[in-house]
Amino acid sequence: MARSLLSHFPILSNSTSPLASSLSCAIAPSKCFPSYLFGRPKASSFQCLCTLSVSEPAVPETSSSVRKRIVSGVQPTGSIHLGNYLGAIKNWIELQNSYDTLFFIVDLHAITLPYETQQLAKSTRDTAAIYLACGVDTSKASVFVQSHVRAHVELMWLLSSATPIGWLNKMIQFKEKSRKAGDENVSVSLLTYPVLMASDILLYQSDFVPVGEDQKQHLELTRELAERVNYLYGGRKWKKLGGRGGAIFKVPEPLIPPAGARVMSLTDGLSKMSKSSPSDQSRINLLDSKDVIANKIKRCKTDSSTGLEFDNPDRPECNNLLSIYQLVSGKTKEEVAKECQDMSWGSFKPLITDALIDHLHPIQVRYEEIMSDSAYLDGVLAEGAARATDISDATLNNVYQAMGFLRR
Image (cartoon, rainbow, N blue to C red; front, side, top):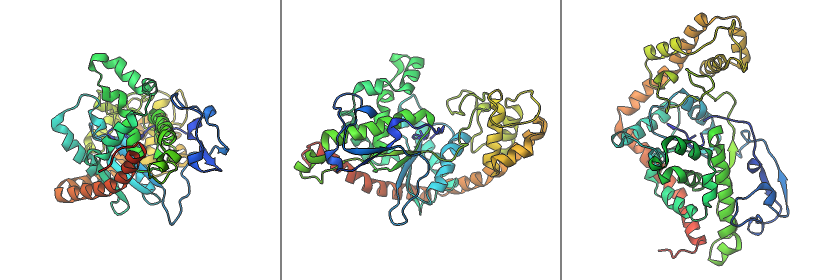
């Protein structure tokens, strides 16, 4: 996922920042500029003859003629687990029916921290196969590998020239990871990967991005960077260089998938289920066997309270396990609450174990089928990369033109 792309793609929040508002301008975008140039843009610094409307970042209605576009991806590091699936990939299956969707394996992001070079290619293929096994339909969505579309790296460099270093220094994830690893062990890519993430999104003129709580700050940076580049190089400046004028990039909106996609660790109900956790006991991997799943649920952390209930802040593990059961069983929250309110852990653990095994078994079977047909998987990735290249090259050429480069 696999850390997910802004799901790098999954803890979901219903909070809305000032930059998650939609700006509906009554004048042409090329004539409507924020009053900043070199500083970090603020909502209060945007001065134009337009109306400001704050909309809920829920799943919007889409036109039957022109579909809005969504991009998302997961890092191919480690094993894809239940959190990646319920927080990101499972939502894609619904989104692909209503949107123009591009789902990619973000392998360039996977090298920002130490990794096994001999495992990267295999993990990339595994991740692609899991996408398909989970239900991503290649007749509706494009599936490709990030590094197979070179425009991602090219646009990142161009965007870097317009990104103030102060913006990156404020990124919370960089602060946390650099503090843990120490300056000598932190690469420049860890600092600049939010710019690559912005490139991933802006290349495809994305309308919406599924956003996770831990990546929300990066989407805000992407939006700010899009507005900054549109200001610095778009509008009349671009038109004077022979371009069409107006905005170079769409400013993407956050998309909040249905509630309940926040999956926590099996060993700590206050921590996100994560591949970076040293304990495999903390997560259910999508390819775990029946026995492994049963053992992990048997040993997972619970409490000594009587009965099971949602949303009790003093019982985070209880809320997490009930939420997982709700999502994999397909039942409503109300149905689960009623079914489990008088249960003991001894009765509930076999129930959730069976639900997990039943839900994951078809995915595991389909995964093995896909991995046994390498030509099919290669074809899917090649076709997806070709479509992604067509879209991204058009954007990249516009950026080169607007920034004044001599084109071949």
